[in-house]
Length: 468
Image (cartoon, rainbow, N blue to C red):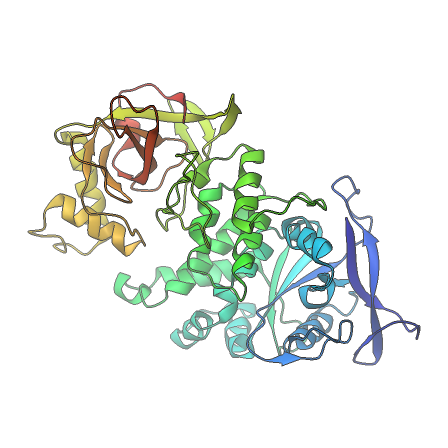
């Protein structure tokens, strides 16, 4: 793919940007998946645009963030030897080149994964926190408050920019030279500070809890195949200026392959689901979105494709003695999709002692002692799910896997079975699909996504593959 990077160039025959005493211009490069690493090195800049806007010296018709140039200057100050920089405001093709722009936005994971390093530039309010970390000192509540209000933490693009970095470092505007914190050091300081808080105090920093998960994902990303469901959950709490950015960012988080120019125009949501299918990862089916009218198991196109539960998915699980990747693997077979590493269980009159004991212990461990005293088990389980962003119904169904909470109503009197993904696990259970036929003579199978709250590895049924 064609890639433009900023580089020093003192020629006078093209638009330029003055950075300090140097003139920088956009230089075209070719970067493909088979380009040997180190062919040319560049640094990617990750920052939040904010609300301010400024003129664009390369595309006068389109304005950019007023933070763009300060972000570049911050990187140059920390990395004076840096001579090639990729930054979205200048290096993404302008809207008057829609095909090239779409291909670049769809290739963000590839671009950031091929950079020699990614430098995050936070706002100046974070400087005291970064200085504490650089001195190996503990973060104080005032530092946590500043990081909690940092908008970089909640932007859609910054998630994929960070998790794809082969080397992630963090600085901020106005930071003196040498204030460049490695991801692992930042995570260590943040994690220590959060873990010393009481649960009630830690709940005051929901963004920092997400940031801790993000930085952990950055470190383990090269070892695990990140499932689509995990990306969907991580993106649910993030914001973006343009609706399509939500899906471009998710595509960048699950794929480090360059996109190709195409005349096939589909919505960003459809493009994301097709990318998942191409990878053989069907965990996107566990979205709380309604179902497609033709392929009943498939989510319909929507604006954000929210996850059925906002909780980190285990990257690797061990089931029946074998290690499985943390995703719902699948492939198309004659117009149907066959998914693997699932169990198919029936509806029962009530959950057994093992499942009830697991739910009770999980609830007791998640809250202070006595919090759920006098509350019906099923009601307490629903309240716990609702705190984690579950938007479905309290009307639970008992299964061999535990309590199944559906996203929407499963009609009464139906013969229902549950397809539960044992290859995807939360600490409290796994996602699943309730499926049934509306009428005995109706060949169409209906699917309702939901959360199976229970001890999945205690189910005495074979792990198998099924067609949806």
